[in-house]
Length: 222
Image 1 (cartoon, one colour):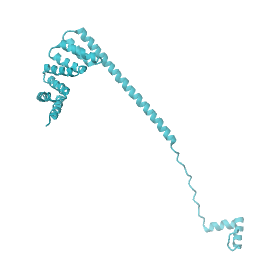
Image 2 (cartoon, rainbow, N blue to C red):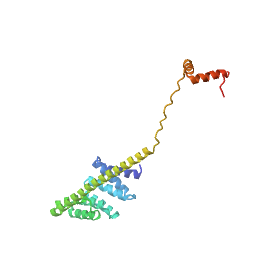
Image 3 (cartoon, rainbow, N blue to C red):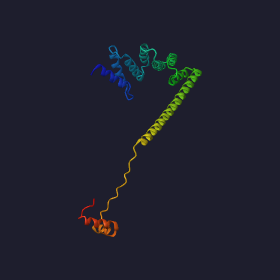
Image 4 (tube, rainbow, N blue to C red):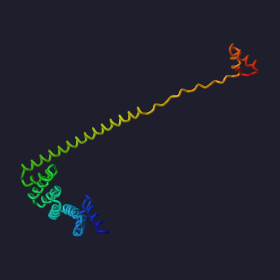
């Protein structure tokens, strides 16, 4: 099995909720072996940090998240992750500083405010914690309101599209050629010899024409 395949398998273990502690430790070993030669250092540092969190090795998780911040210092998510790990190493103030940095980079994240509030509450910063929780709630409400507006906009657009389609269909129906109704041709009723004879001999004009037809030697007159 190739080194890349080993890394991909280790990443799958790191992100599988059903992985055991042995799975995480195996993944950590794979990441540590591959790290010096791998070009995908961000992926390895991040996923190894996840494994460290899942095995309770929070100080090592802090180390890997710090490496990620060295690589990409403007990513709020990495500061939030390191803050989470720091809080579990009992570095509460360091965690708050990282949460504040994350909010500086991403000020509208309700989860970051909430998690910072939890740490503030743990060390007795009740006033600051309550403010963080309020900001988190306000941002969540704003997100929900935006979702509702987005849903309403989508429904409005959908309705507008349906109305336009209805109009197009109506115009298409008008443009369709109307079917031409051809009246049925009345079948000619073939007259019997008796009926023809009766018509000839009872009608004065036709009888005269018949006599003339005989006089002409059974030829039509010109």
